[in-house]
Length: 176
Image (cartoon, rainbow, N blue to C red; front, side, top):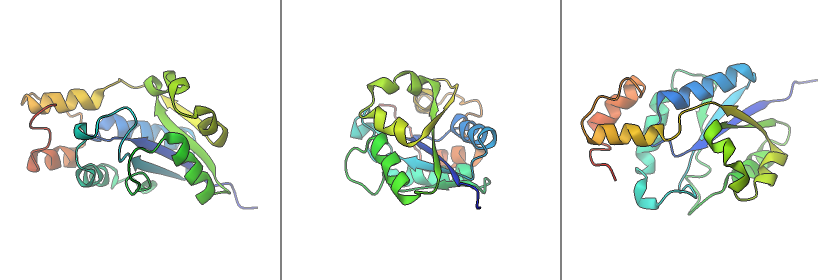
């Protein structure tokens, strides 16, 4: 009998993807023996205003740079290819249908998990996957954007190729 495929779903704005995101995915992949981690960048997160997000092609390019050395990490465009807001329960339901033989895991920060009860149809999400909760600092991406806008050092918070991409494309030069 073939072992069950174990897939970690990791959604977020990834604006920008930073070392904390990568550390979370690596830790989840190793500790939970995941066969794959799917990074799912959001088109429009329910809790953010559209003007707050960097263009999807930049966020995707940064993700590609950040995860290229990890053979079990992939980017999935499910939420990017939808219009408007996609809720996490919809994303998990999509992957449950796409991979009916897989065991799904939902990778999230401890700050998000503490607020899970406020998420739309969180009961459906929890019925279709197992959460992997990783301790993290909330709003790290916001602080990175702020520091870049103020021309302050970012202390190696971004993977090297991502930092190069950000600087080359003058992303976050102004902080909103």
